[in-house]
Length: 538
Image (cartoon, rainbow, N blue to C red; front, side, top):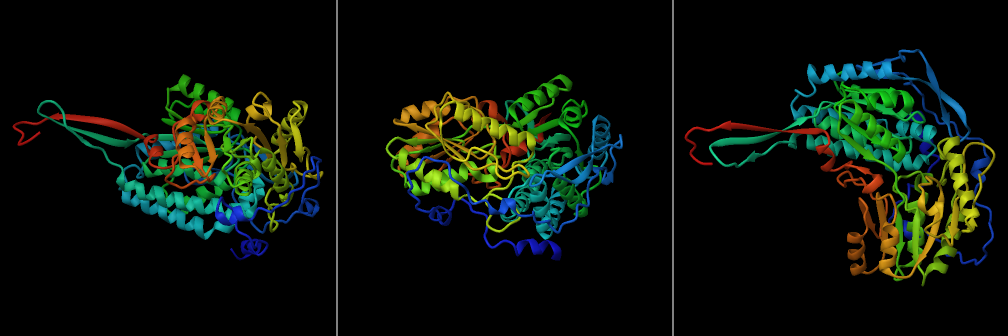
């Protein structure tokens, strides 16, 4: 802990959220130049800060023990700031998934976890939350080292949300119950809400600690056992978190973590005949494969949280300075690697030119560099594949004749840093307005009428989220009902409370994570009917 605390001395600023203080932080730069200018990037060229944290867990966690992969293979894990290897992790495949599922099945059928009182389960979850809070700085440092997001974001926002989610679902553990149902005739009818069994969970690389908890917490609260496959880019914090759960008293076999690649370990988990439920977060194309594998095996139910191309709509009554800052946050947060990023910025024609100039100025002030350094807002993209994908979409925007206001290239010659990029004069038919870029690229589109922007915002294969910025309650009410998206943020963005359900329409997924709604995915409902002789009442 003492060593990890030294990181916090590098930081003097909390992670910004969409708060009034954040909105007031916007400057008033009013240059009309359309040229491409330099960014505040001194931190990129400096030697990276080596975080004082030990990488202690690199093996698969099966039946409460860290074990090598059955094949003996390992794979490298990289620091996206430098593209250098920071650890070699056990490479699980189908045989490791088989071992983990068998362990989880035995723990469910014969072990104490589903038979434990809900109150005892909640106490173990609360102890895990306490341990995570105690080790918060180490977890945050590992998350940033492996993922590249700003350390202050990991420390002040994401790891605390892990603790909050565990408190929330620990509170639900002893409040899950069935109903007594009135029926026709002399029968006592009741429903039982039972754990579904062995849950397979596949988490992505953009929010490793957070999405680990989105999936694990409700499954545990309901009394299930778990086999979780982490993303191959970011396996380190999943192993650390699982270790803390076992320190808290989680019985062996209840939570198993296998590191590995999607086509091997992920496919084996999705198609496994002894997995009762599957939850996947990731790309839409991969989600289709996961659902197909689940259907072709034992028709296990699947929760899918997939991609998005979310509209952020700014009306002409908006305070432009505040709208610029909130739209900037909605897009550039987490290096743009956010499934619900406000990546289609629709701006009313009356304030369009002013907005574009100020959005450009804000992007050019964005500080990009080592995410462990004080004041840095943006770290590197996750890996070379994602880095090159972002640059391809930037080239596509240029070739489509969108106006490149700023950015448009890599930053530095080491790691996977991309300049904050802003395009104006974007039209709905351009790829940068249709596809999920998953990077720091803001596309600004113009609209005139409310009905027109509703039609255009909904004309997408996605439906994960949307944002609306207006002073009019009537406009807000119209938009919240008209937009076909799982979440609509009004005059805010990326507000993720533990109780708020999250999921999408259309290709953005099936089912919901978080809140009470996620519990339903990990429960079976059983109807029990028995005759009643000479009832006093029915």
